[in-house]
Image (cartoon, rainbow, N blue to C red; front, side, top):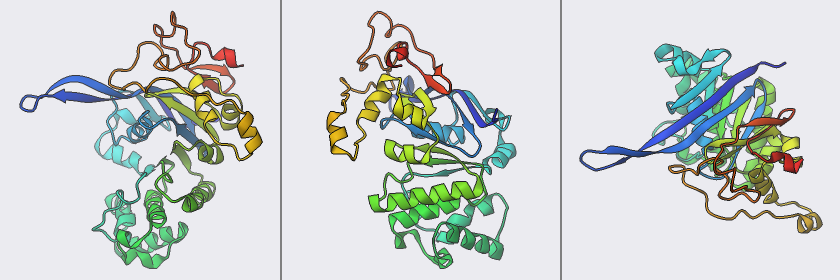
Length: 329
């Protein structure tokens, strides 16, 4: 059995809601991540998909300790990241990196490209001066940019070039785990394939492990070996990509996949389109029991609103959080 690089168990991240300008008091909390569990194996790409606002990005930022978790466990190579502080946490952070969604907001416009990419090397005392510039030049070449760009500023580059700079910065310390937070969603369609191919090449070359956050299911199917589907802060289905797309067992996953267009017009015309009714509930006041029961086409009113389904293994490697997932077998 392959040993996971990272184990996440019962991860929760709640953001407090305050009221009152003079004496603010907490009146509630937004349950952005509410009990997420998964394993991430070395060298694989795990896709994390779902609607906007379901908590995908919060999961990525929380496992890197950019957000402090409310509850749960994050184990990396047997080390509990929840217990680390100060220098110990910084040493572990060298093994983790993040590629941010917006290449325009994630690069400091006042810094040159060489300083942006080399900043991790300076912070972790890996290289300075000429050695830093030499390593930065190598990183830029690795992502398909000219080494001469180290003296340029971000405003001189296109969105695709900026995202390549972000990728170079993420790889500066040779991390084991890279969280890719929708790295292509803000790019032109013509550039998206280039960036995805670059990420695949780098993964194969350096044995990187990706947590690939996205809402484009077609792209996730292309780059990821396994896929986890999130709804309202929870993982509702987790399986190998072929199993998930070929036999989805959660009603929400089935609705998502039915919305993915098929190039063949005949197959597209014959396919059943599942339209979910109702609005997405607020994470500040999620429904009781199964949080999908307000929109579920197979809801049982006497059971689903009362009991929260656990994420269980229906088939080998296929996990589903639904009381009646067996109906789709």
